[in-house]
Image (tube, rainbow, N blue to C red):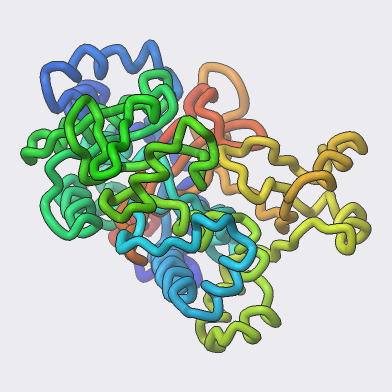
Length: 430
C-alpha cells in the first residue's frame, strides 16, 4: 500500500495514539549505561533512583516532520549568523555576549510539539540535557513481537552517536582535547547526573581525562583553568547561569573571556539562540523583512514557529484578553520554571509576569502517546527534542509526561526513543 506524503503525518499520529508497544530491553539499557565497571552499580540503581527517567513506549515521526525540523534548524542557525540579526539581538544582551569565541556550542536542543500542520517549535535550549541517556535508550530497543519489527525503523538520524559527539568536542577545540571539565552546580545532585557519567566514560575511553565538577572546584590562575589540580582545555558547560553573573562563576568567566579555554555552550550562543525573546523576532514577518531575511527563509520560520510576543506595557491589554490561547514564559527561564498556561493565570500571577521579562507564545497543544499504565488515563502528552550541532540534527528524542509541562514524574513517562514512520506500512494496514 502506498502512503502519500499528505497522509503519512495523519498515520503517524494514529500510531502514536493507538498502537501499544514496548520496545525497551531493561537489561540492555543497564549494560549500555554501564560502559565501565564503576558505572555498573549506578546503572543498576537507576530504576530505583530514577523510576520515571525512561519510557518503554517509542514515539513515531513522519518523514515530512523530520524534513521540516531539519530545515528549520538549518534556517535558524543560518539566520543567526547574519550581521543584522546578530546586531539586533546582541544590542539588548549582557556585555559578555559581545565576546565572540570560535566554538559554536554543543548540544543545542530544539523542542517541538507535533501538530496536524507539522512540527511547531516551542523553544530552543543551548545546554539541552539527556543526549547521552537517549543514546543508551536507543541502544536498548528490542521488538516486543514480530509485528513490532515493522515499526522499528532506523533510529534517527545517526547510528554512530558516541563517535559523532567525540568529533564534535574535537571540532569545538580544533584539536583532540586533553582534559574536559563537565561543569554544573552540585553535579552529583543533578537529576541527569547519570549522563555526565556516561559522557565521562565515553571520553575517557577515547583517551581524554574528564572531570565532573561544581564551579567552586575550578581555579583560574591567569594562564590556566584548573580542575582537580590539572589544566582544562575544554569546559562542557551545563550551568543555567547563562551569562556567568554569579560570584561563584568568576573563575569560569575569566577563563572564557581570556580565550585560552573553550567553554561550550557559551553566553553568546544563549543570547543568539536560547533567549526566548528571539522567538518574537523569528515569528514576526515584518521584523524578518527588516533584518534582510530572505522570503524563502522567512516562510520556513513562520511555518514552524508559533507567533510569539514580548509582554510589555503596550501589549499587556491585548495579551490579557487573549490569554486563554497563550503560554507565558520568562525570557531567560529554563526547565519550565515560572511558565504559565494562560487559562490558569490568576490576577496575582499576571502582575508578577508584568513585573518581569516574559514572552507570550501561541499555544500549540502537545500530541499524545498511548501508554499502558497501572493507573491514570492511557494517553500521555509528549514533546520532541532535536539535538543539534552547527545547524545539523544529530538525534531525536521524545519526552512523555502528564501535567502542564515535562516533569520526569509520570508513571509510564520519561525519555522515549523516536522512530521514523515505517516504510512497509502496507503490511500493517493493507
